[in-house]
Length: 205
Image 1 (cartoon, rainbow, N blue to C red):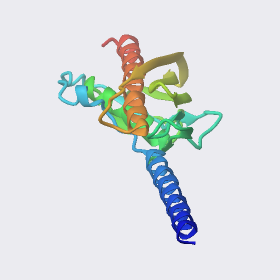
Image 2: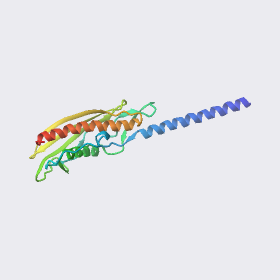
Image 3: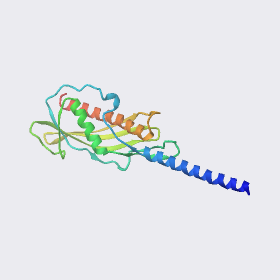
Image 4: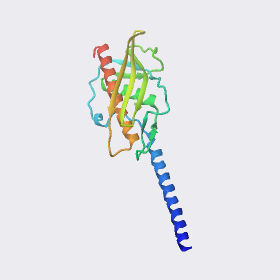
């Protein structure tokens, strides 16, 4: 009888431990699902801006043409047991538009936010706009950002070009979701900087 009671108590204890462990794992996975997309990349935060160009640009918000806007990719959970979706804590569209504005200003332009790519402003050198095609990371913490950049001058479109770049910022000190977000920031920076370099070329530097 005593042995049976010990066995029953042991079984109940094991069930409690297993349940607690499962809940803990689920809790860790839930935390890892959310990440804040930031800009610029930490390594570029101290970069020097170019001198003023005395040229004004109208920047209109990018269009978001991603097939799935609910997440920015799939990574492994904290314990690598299953794949989880990374849901951004902030707006992807605002993240991209702000990055373009930041890099244009770093390149010396005065940037005015518009509402459509047909907005006009006396003295503006160009209207810049674009499309978000893809923002995604995968289980290996590699990320890709694909954009279309557009330039309008004097009421007509003078450039429409694809910009895509990869990024990776795997770190043992951050969660998989945070590594995903950092990787996406690196990929976005590479895409946007190439776009702004083409804006420079179009507007004569």
